[in-house]
Length: 210
Length: 164
Picture 1: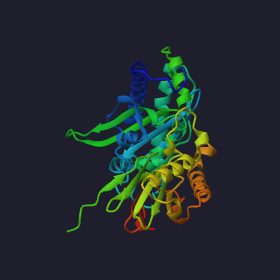
Picture 2: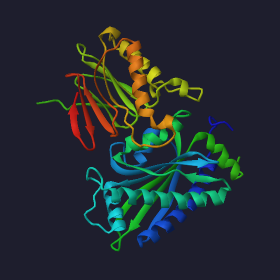
Picture 3: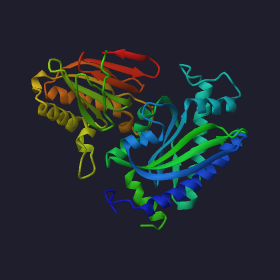
């Protein structure tokens, strides 16, 4: 299969399945870290245009805290952990026990940057180890890097590889939600996995759906 | 009463044209570069949102011309010509090409500066002068150009809005 071949719904369903396995592991790690129940699930896996990809993350101009990391090994691709500023503040305030912490500060206090990168490490680590166990592929994340900026500016960086092959990208979109006691959601973020097109083949072959 | 301004929106790896009283805008430029080509007298402008420096990087059969600096600037110039603009009347303003993250393969990390270099090279090849630029750095930009005034407004998260 070359990367110009159409991706079928069956392929996307398989990716959703492995995405959900990764998400379940990541949610467990995150819940333990924060001492709160965090829900993570994969609402959809879609082949979308780059502009639609930004919409999934809240719109091109929305300001978010974005953690970016590459995945390497038998697979290559990009991963983003995208939180709206308010959600990121909420997470980090709780994590470092400092209610005054805010990502709007410039420069961002080092403590918050480290905590956010550590969150990225833990999430991607648990997500990818589940993915690795399930597929039998060696997958490991690079060191995460943080940027607080517009969605378009952050996420487009992870589309550079894909854009050399296509104007569309397969996005495994994981929704991160935390339910408060009153039922409102104080955290609403996303975790995106975008394999590089040459890795599509590797994934499908490892799962026997080629 | 002032007429409501129509804003023409340009997506990523996309291009479009605006005429007075319209303005033209693209949002969330990171390593991408926004290239405005405009004719001051005719009050018409085209905007291109470049993602990659060179069409030789394209690894698929069909290419989207607006994705690359070389083919995109050419396509934008052709689109403006079709509107009756003479290439010699064209001037350029450019913005973007930031380095959003400090790691990755060296090629990808430097994609912002490489995009800017490629845009400048192509504009120079076509003898289109760059009147103003706001490139590099590590911040995302949203830009809007008004053909009536030839002013390019640039908004960043930390520095607010400024005009070039």
